[in-house]
Image 1 (cartoon, rainbow, N blue to C red):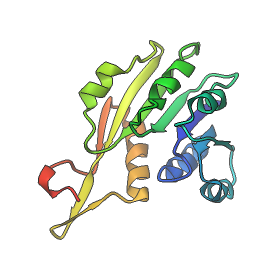
Image 2: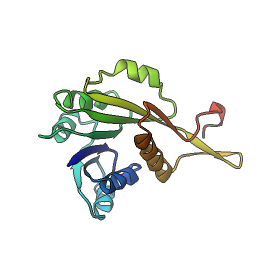
Image 3: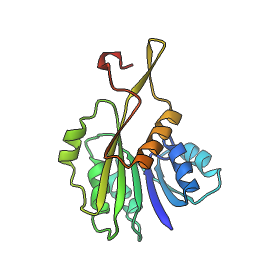
Image 4: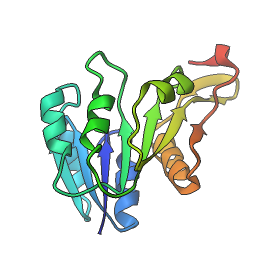
Length: 175
């Protein structure tokens, strides 16, 4: 069975978690909110909660370092001083099979800098999904959770190394 890890999969990426179950994945979801996780778990499927805050690095690493390899990882990890993305990459370093990692990033993220600073394991295919915004009737707004999930799903389907959800220009119209 294919296994996926979704960091942030009980919140704005809940739609991605459900879609992956429909695709036949066994899903492990990292989340902090028991309420959001309960809502996610109410639907049928191979969903397993991992209640942990990724900023607590020891617990985070213990929770994601399973006895099996990940086929797919979707990570919505904010850039914080603790650097949980490095912890995630370290935890999959010993994995023996190939995996695809989709790193979901905010609109102001520097994708090239991110690529250059992360040590991606050689068996890991690294993809970036950059979240933008929408302009409706001359009013800008951030993407909804549904638009974000749909965009991440399209990124996974496309397999592109970089995928933009929404728009990034004109920069001055960001909400």
